[in-house]
Image 1 (cartoon, rainbow, N blue to C red):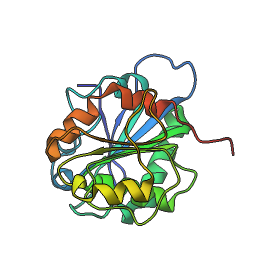
Image 2 (image 1 turned 45 degrees about the horizontal axis):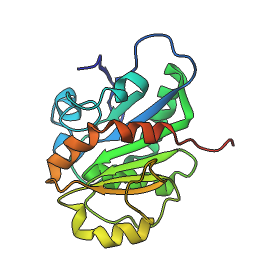
Image 3 (image 1 turned 90 degrees about the horizontal axis):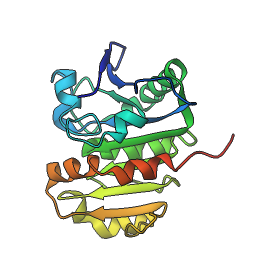
Image 4 (image 1 turned 180 degrees about the horizontal axis):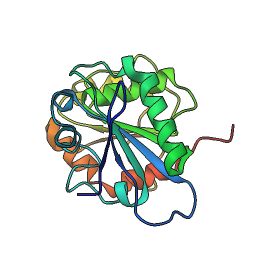
Length: 213
């Protein structure tokens, strides 16, 4: 398991992983939004590392090449949108304190966290360079206008046609395009496990950046 720091902050505490060694420049930042069962009162390290880029066995590119920040909700629910400003402020703090690159800051989430990926992106233009929802439970209300890699599974495949149409998604190519839909036929948890083990998605993220302001 990478070296994880629990940062006590209000109203959301968060887990932080910063790569070892001196950086060559600003580092990419990956923000992870957890699902239903990982909210408080679940202990934060147990909850946040159950799924996602900080889970033992996930691809090492996450913690080797990126700053990973993962806030924890105070209660379970499909409520990430209520904390959109808080998440943005946490990410800005991490960028400032740890040399994160605002042009290469990405948002991922599993299940209800995948819903949060869309909710936050729709109300925060210019904050995120690319999105990685993993088996979200509902189709977003609009198109966030950003690169999207969607890892679909047991829950989201029920709305496959609507996700693909709403977000103009296509199959993964080599190299992958800016709008990708991948379904490896797994159940809900298995989808998250395979997705966060997939090095090519981290490479895809790091290749995307926001244009200069």
